[in-house]
Image (cartoon, rainbow, N blue to C red; front, side):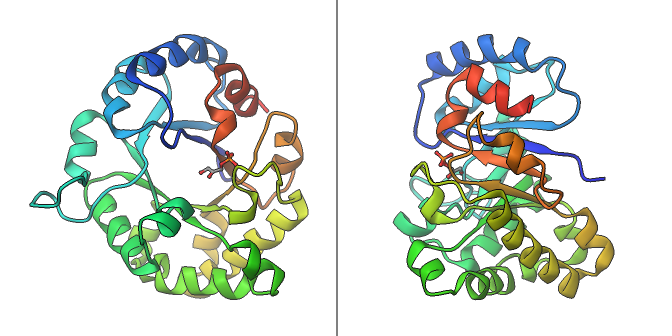
Length: 249
Ligand code: 13P
């Protein structure tokens, strides 16, 4: 069966000192969590502190974005080799905040995903509809477009190494979680697209995470859905006890 992946996206929160303090509390609380993969994605300047603080543990560290060139005159960007060099193993790609505020498109999401895979990183690629799209009954259409124009461009070998995160934009940071049934329905739609593009075996193996106001008190209901293979957690991953209780669902 698919191994759960419990990932925290710290967004633009925490300094290096706060990062070290988090792991001091968090590590012992998840030391026995062998049932899942655990990943934390801090802001770039704190990757080194996070890697250092998780050495010898099963916790993986990831970036929140990367640029597709290996190096060059791209002020403010960070490349795959740089993430690998600092000890990151994972990377979030195409988060809705990147799409909304920083002009990311399905096309750039694909480029970044390919670049991450070339460096041996494990991408967590985000998709999801906005509120007005859901209200207009376009959820499936949006997911189809994001898949087709984004990760659907990967080769089967490349696709096998990514996780997909379904994050309905209206559920992010709003306290409005999609019900487990709503999330599962979107996950089924995504899995059907994986099957159509990459085959039944790939669809059965693909890890599809849910993200959007995941909290200790709704994690059990979400993880009870066979379609939900883990979560990508924002706010509730910032506090050690809260993310540990999500990991230990
Ligand atoms: P919240 O858990 O704060 O709603 O954020 C979700 C998210 O965007 C994770 O990537």
